[in-house]
Image 1 (cartoon, helix red, strand yellow):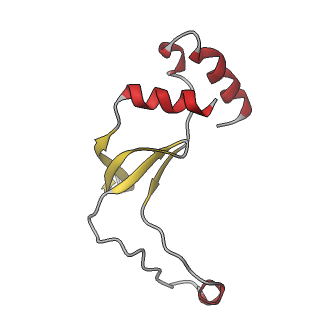
Image 2 (tube, helix red, strand yellow):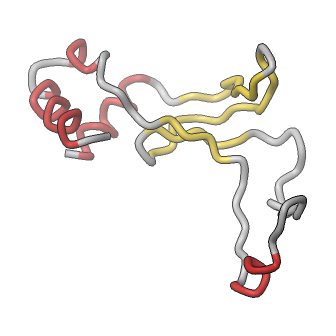
Image 3 (cartoon, one colour):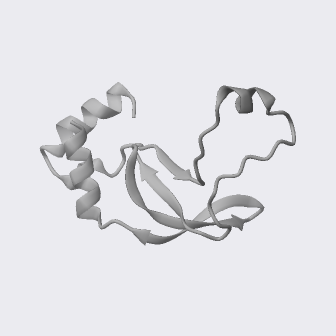
Length: 102
């Protein structure tokens, strides 16, 4: 979120929830994580495979502005990767996250 959006959010949080609906947020889905040492990192090349230690088909975590938002499954939609949401926070909790950011 840029400074302009953050300032706008700060002002509008005080006047009500409806004013927040057009603010852009960062939406990130995390497929998995792992730790590599520098030696392993330097050995990576085109075609290298990194094991994320996560079973295929397991839900991925969804984040909005670095806060957990829900879980979903990776799928293909109109030839693109997409996320089908299968667990999500309620809107009240999401708004509380934004208030804590200020």
